[in-house]
Amino acid sequence: MFDLEAQVEKFRKGIFVLSCIYIIFCTVSIGYSEGEGKMDRSQAMFEQVSKFKKATVFLGEITDKDGKSEVHFFGTGSLVSIQNIFHLVTAKHIIEGFQKAKPDGDIKVFLNTKAGKIKAVSINELRKKLNVDWMFHENKVVDVAIIPIELDIQGDDIAVIPESAFEATDKIFELTDVFYLSLQPGIISPGRINPIIRQGMVSIINDDKTFYIDGFAFPGNSGSPCFLKFSPLFYDKNGPGFFTPDTNNGFKFLGIIGEFLTSKDVAVSQQTGRPRVIFEDNTGLSRVWSVNFLREIIDSQVFRNQIQQIQDIIKNRATAKN
View (cartoon, rainbow, N blue to C red):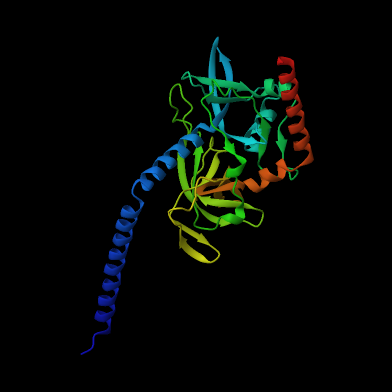
């Protein structure tokens, strides 16, 4: 008697075995064909991640308590190079929130030095010295802020993200793997700025050029740089595909973490029928403001004027030295 269910199960197991054999064959083939190239790429990946960690800085303030200085971190930022001028990029709400709470306060940018110490760069001093200020998007809801920053190439242990690494949203798709580097309160390496690395995937790309990732974000993670994660598999409008060994994918700057998406549970009074308490939970989805918005700020006339102003200062300094 023909047993259809048994035949289907036999066929399913056969497909599974063939799939395993194919995966093993591909893995072995790639291992033999790549040789030292695989080691070179692994080393390159390690070096890239190390650079991006050095391009990640913490934002905070220094307060005085009982005659002792205390450091408080409250946000994350990244260092980028635009027209060969260093800039700090972070979330706009961090800056506006601090300025509203402490109009006379001074945000500090904390980074590592090659001498093995932590250095604090004063934003207020930068604004006065370079005659610059924070630049925001003309659309007030865009949560992106950028300002020029002066760094010591010889003494600071930093790296910067070049413009060539900026990747627009039209180059990514749902299921794209990403990672982001963040300040995590409670995990602080003594004497070093050492961001944690989280990973996720693109969950949905919104019409406004923001996108949500399936990755948790918490207070302190705002402003974290988000990057395309190296992967042999990609997805696009034509479906899934595989990168070749020579394809240079991954490690592209996609944007910055703005905020996490919450779910709300409302407790209603049985007596009055009115809401009494609202409970909010982290859904695990985080909003990323894409580099599209950063590009739009960079392309604005007010930003170009500020760049020109800094270039003039650099020229004047060079002339004075000569």
